[in-house]
Amino acid sequence: MPGMTHWQSGMFAAYFPGNATFEGSLADLYASSVSNPGFNWSCSPSCTELELITVDWWAKVLGLDPAFQCNAPGSQGGGIIHGSASEVCITIAIAARERVLAELAKTIPPPTVNGSRPAMPASANGMGCDIANELDVSRWRSDLTSRLVLYATTQTHSIAIKAASVL
Image: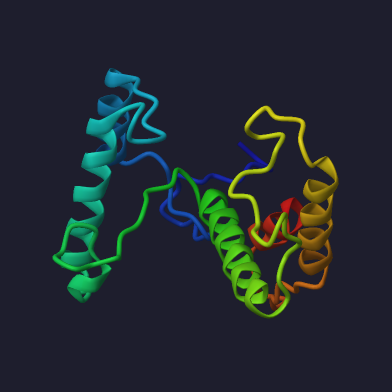
């Protein structure tokens, strides 16, 4: 078909491999057969446990140190399986932002209530108390976040730009 990009052609080279492989079809068939929304442990413990086992298996296959495994003794490692590169990019960008904000909180402390910062915003626990402090914390986060920079080159994939736009 003229004018079409043939992703499944053996002559096509791109950022992503072709989607139609025998193994991929089997995996999709298996995943579709259970139709399980495994987005967290309480919703679907078996999916989460299988994900942890798979991540540990990959860490072993790649020869990574046991510190990178979920279930290794004394390890704080681990990982998650995402459905797309875009999901990975936004997750990494959010994790980086939160890590920087946690570090900045050590030198630029957020607003407090009676000397301690509430563990949960008032609106999150359904209480209408201390909205002023909640706004102060929100302004503090907004001010610090507005100063953060995501560096990229001209060769960076467009998903990095999308992640920066979402944040």
